[in-house]
Structures are given as structure tokens and as C-alpha cells.
Length: 326
Ligand code: F6P
Image (tube, rainbow, N blue to C red; front, side, top):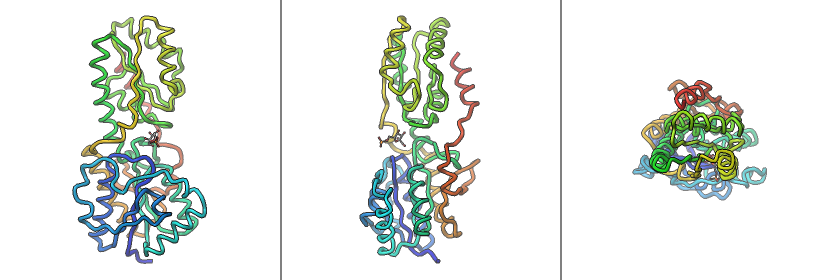
């Protein structure tokens, strides 16, 4: 079937660069003479029929803005067959022929079920700060989040150093250590705790002891929110203070600050390339795929592959972190 009208939405946790991705999708539609419609609040808006026609000028002045002007949601309704049926009815009612979704693994899982149930053409763009999607080297928003974290830790370092303190800094990543590991290296962290590798409390204490001995006066430990021993970061801080009396420990939870702010140039370019790539893929007849970037080339992988586990963590990075923190 010839595609004449494309709907686009953002879903799941927002990420910086989603707006740039929307802009690219809308403008690629305009370029190829396709109609485009925006759907508000992700799959929720699809179920409710909250649609708005978009043209090339509708997306002016947003390339530099964080968040998503279409808003986002983690839809519960789309998990149900009835919700998906309602969404399909609305797409038919608005004469939409294809859908572009920007989000993370939850978004792609929903999109894949919907595609199989209704045989409706969908392509996805990876938009999440977590960088936890298979089949793409980078997700939209990850680079900006890394820079936000590094900037915050640089500030924490000033005060950590002035008071000879140990800071535990919690960053996002329920299941993925990409932010913690890369920001940890970039910010010169002492130790990095990630869900993919359980360091264990004893080894952490040993490492902190060693660094005191080696002459370090202050330390920064970056903790991914999903790490085994760092899950309750305040308890971990207490445990360290109880077992290493020489340490005065403070905790900073960076939280949602990591999801906001103007996207980095890297994320803007990535989102633009993937947005254009999404419309190219649809016009080539591809369906049920995520558009990603691998070795700096725009590529596509089936949704089922994209959500199959995560991008493998680079063990070389762990080695670099260990060596540069001696
Ligand atoms: O998936 C992106 C993410 O920011 C995770 O890193 C974090 O664990 C989660 O979303 C937080 O979700 P919410 O904003 O719904 O609390």
C-alpha cells in the first residue's frame, strides 16, 4: 500500500533530542510530500485520538529544546488488546497509513505487538537517555545526559575536595550502566557501580581503603540506580561510614535533571539522521523495525531484536575506569 499519511509520537521517558527527531520526521514527510500528524502523550493519545496535523513550520524553533513538544506517557492502556484496538480505529479514522514512534524498549515492545495484531506499518527511533537498546550504538538523549552528569559531578568534586569527603552520586539506569560507566570515566570517578557487574560491598571497601592509602583526600563513587549494592544509596553511605571511620560520606541523587536540558549537537544530529532514516525506511517498504546507528551508518533492526537484552557493555571501558582511577 502506498503511504500518504504518517503519524508520529514520543513515548516512555522523555530524552533530550526527541524534539529534533520529531522535527526531522515531520520535515522528511514534507520533503516527500507525505501528510504528517502528531499524536500527543504517546500511545495514550493514540487511544484517545489526540491528534494534530503538522507541517514543516509546525516544528520550527524546537531543535534546541529538551523534552518533547508532543509530550510523552508510559501508557497502561496500550498493554491491553482493547486499548490497541481503539488506537487502530483512530489511525484508520484519521486515515493514517504508517506510524513512527520515538521511545525506548517499552515503546518498541508495544509497537511490535501492535504491528503483529493489526499489520500496521511502524518504525521506531531509539529515544532514551539509558542507551540500553540493542542494534544501535547510541540512543537519542544519551550524549546530552552524559554531559549533564559530568557537569554536575565536576561541581560536586569542588566541594568534595574542599572538605575531604567521599561522595556517592546516583545516576539513572535501572538496568543499564552506560551512563554511570561513561560519565564516571569522564568525571574521574574513584569507583563506578553498575547493574551489569556486582562489585560487592567488601571489594568497594577495599578499594576505598586503598585510595586513602595512596594519598587521595576526596573521592567520587558513581552509582547506577539499578546497581546491586547501591540500590539504596543512603544505606550504602551508612555502611561505608560504619566500616571506614576515616570517611565522611555524602550522597547526591541527580534524578530527573539528567533527562532535561538542551540537546547536545551530537544528539541533534543523531535525531535528525534517524528521523530522516525512518521515513526513508517506510518508503522502502520496511516495517516493524527500529532505525539505529551502527559504526556511524544509519541502519535498521527488527523491533524484536532491538528489545532483546541490551547493547553489550564494553569491558574495555571497565578496564579504563580501573586503570585511570589508581
Ligand atoms: O528510561 C529512562 C529513565 O530515565 C531511566 O533511566 C529511569 O530509571 C526511568 O526512566 C525513570 O522513569 P520515570 O521518569 O517514569 O520515573
